[in-house]
Amino acid sequence: MVAAVSGNIITVIEGNVSNQVWTRNLTVNGRYIRGYCTPDFASLADDGSSDWAVSSTAKAREKGVFKGDGDGNYRWQDPITREEMAVVLDRLGLLN
Image 1 (spheres, rainbow, N blue to C red):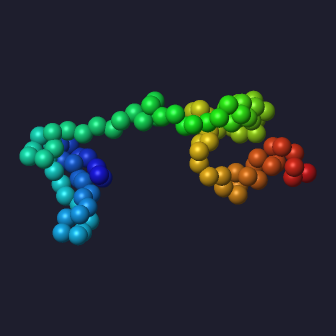
Image 2 (cartoon, rainbow, N blue to C red):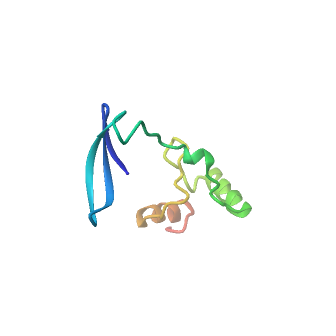
Image 3 (tube, rainbow, N blue to C red):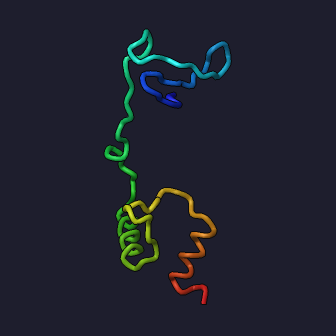
């Protein structure tokens, strides 16, 4: 796993090396690594949301129950914190 990149040095975390996990610095174009990439998983992923989930989240955005971060990220798949739950309940008028 790539842990860091600095110039043409890649720091990797390796497992199963003499039953240990360790880090190692490798040079790009060296013996072991010619390069690396980060796939654009978000553009390929199907989050599996059902039609009712898509409809419900759209309604929640329209009614302002969820505001997101301003950049279009609503973190739908992330767990909700107690603080975020309190905001939702307040926006729904349930804390009056």
